[in-house]
Each structure stands twice: as structure tokens, then as C-alpha cells.
Image (cartoon, rainbow, N blue to C red; front, side, top):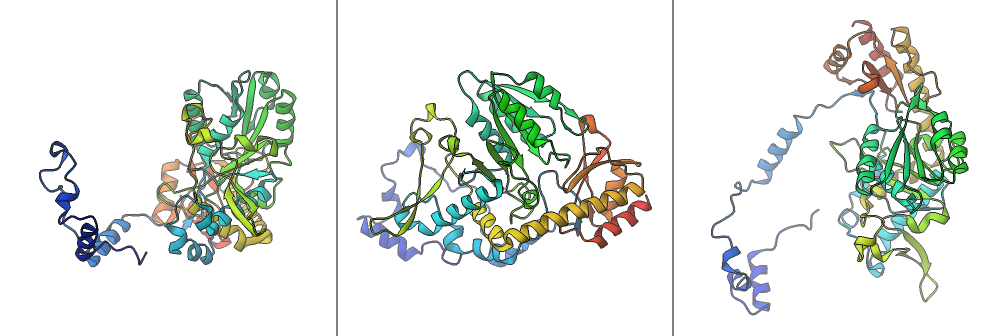
Length: 439
């Protein structure tokens, strides 16, 4: 950020002179005196660089940094290659705005195009947008893509991330769509409920794979039931799981969405995160947000431009199908760099390690009475019972620098959602077990 310095007094005088003025007061002469400030703003005194550094460090020291993390629930701690930060920290990329002018934005446009291509390869879909705010927004926006005049019912599984469910509920309320929650059965979606209730008035069915409890759903069977009623099938996915699992397209999904945070974005206090969206070719014009396409100029050279943009999204907003007019370009760039650095084999290794370590953790916890709740196949998360009060368990782990699993609420009160990634070594897991043995 070296070039970001304020203008000097001399530069300000030169700008005023070019306008034929002698003072800043003249510059604002046309503004009514009634709305002008009569006194200085009540702002704290400016600080030196050293004072700012001390202040920021003091705030940072309030954070609790854990040496070992066994919690996921939608946000995951993965290894991030150094090249990700190196590339995304470049000033020309970090400060880039929306690439409306392709003549001067080819670098940014190409980076988004490459990101879209990688998302399509991951999900098996035909087209991806330039991303949206986060995974929950992507889920809600995908449901809006499916509504039709004669199809206004939306089904969503109880086994999805509860924060995603809340966001979908908000969107459906605003659009007057009937939202029906599919109950869970033994930690997965109740297939009988789908078979008996999804009908010709259904716009879409949304499930998460693997679901919030880490279990794999019967994605193919759900797809068959949904399509037999003529509805659209939406699948929310953990992108890391796609290193070893079937793609949403292979399950028969029409739209694939998810949270891109595991792809090179660190755990932060609230983000920013990255919502990815991809769909089949027949639904590409319903994708919200921006899409970058590849073309050729008059000289036959490859170029990149924003494409398939519905004018309603920008102008006739009362007729638009989405209020998304932005994208998470910097976060998408990080995801693209991460996927490029890891490659197909690297992503598969991350997925295999995450899954195998989660199964090892489940086995060791079972020896202490933390019995698995669901007997379904799971990826890198699973739910266990707790033989001891959860608060006691979590407080003990925290005192040892370990962030334990996620304490569940509601119907699953008293149970813990555990998570492992490639960042959890065997020694970390064994240390966790030794500590829990002393509870």
C-alpha cells in the first residue's frame, strides 16, 4: 500500500489554482451554510505510526489464538500456501475495482475467468459466476434462481448448516415463497418426506453434501425424487470434499453452491468469505452477479469481458431476480491461486487427510465414551455424545490451547460436532485424547 499517501498542502493549492480558487472555502461556496459544519468534527487526535502499531497490537492481543483446532461447522482451518498471500497482496490486485472497462482490466478479468473455470471443474457444472458474498448468500440466491410462476414451494433439509437455513428463510420471507423444512432421520435427510411431499408446485429442493453433521447424504436418490416432480435440485458442498467425492453434477444437481473459505482463506472474525455458484448451461442466464467470458478482439487476440449481464440487475431493479451486483473478486482470486498451487493431486491429499484424521479421532474418542451419534459415512466432521458436561470439557481444552468441537443446540443439545483437517496431526489428536482422559 506504499502509494497510498494523502495529498500535500502544495498539491492541494495547485488543485485549487487549477480551478481558479484560492481556498477550500471557495470550493464549497455553493453548499448551503445551513448544512455546513460550524465546528471541527469530534475526532480523536491523530497518532504516529508507532502509536498506531502499539494500539493495534494491544487489540490483537485480546484474541485467543489456539494451537490446535477441532472445530468446523462451516469455517475450516486449512494450510494456505505462501503464494496465496504473495499474489493477493500485490497492490494492483488488492485495490482493483469492478472491471467495467475491459480495455484496462484484462488481468483482473482473466483471474476471475480462471476462477470460474476451476469452480466448474470442481463441481462438474457448465458455468460459474464471479462469486457472491458468502456460502449462505449463494444458497439463498440459488433458490431465487428456481422460482417460477406456478412453482413457489421451496424444500430445504434440516441437516444443512443452520446459518444457511436462517439466510434462506429470510430470502423466502421477502419473496413470499413457501419454505418447507425436510426433517432429518438418523442424521441425514428424510427421503420418505421428499417422496411424499415434493410435487408439481415445488420450485426446488436444497440439500448439503456432506451435511452439517458431516454425514454423506444419498445424493443420487434425492436427485431422482426431485427431478421426478419436475423441480430443480440444488446441492451445497464443501469444496475440499470434492477432492475425493462425486461432483454435484454426478449426483444430478442443477445448481452447485458452497462456501469457498476453505480454498485459501484464513479463519477470521466474520470473514470476508466467498460464496461460489455454478449451474448447468440451461440455467446460466439466471445466475446472479457477474460472469466473465472469454472472447477475441478485432485482431484475433484472446480477451475477457463481463458477459450475460441482465440489465435489470443494474437499472430496472424492481424487475430484477437478484439484488447481487457485486462479487468477491479478491477472495475469488485467493481461491484461484490456492487451487492452482494445490492442483488436483494436492486437493485430493487435503481431502484424504481430513477424512482419515477425522475417522481416527472418532475412533479414539469412542474409546473414552464419546460415542458416535450417527452411523452414516462421514467426511471430516462427525457428531458424538459427551460422557461429561460439555462446558467442562471445552473449558479444559481451552485452558490447554485447544479449541474443541462445536457444542450443538436444539434437538442435539448435549452433543458435539468434531472436525479434522490436514492441519490436525496425529500428535495433536493423541494429545487431545490424553487431556480428555483426565476429565
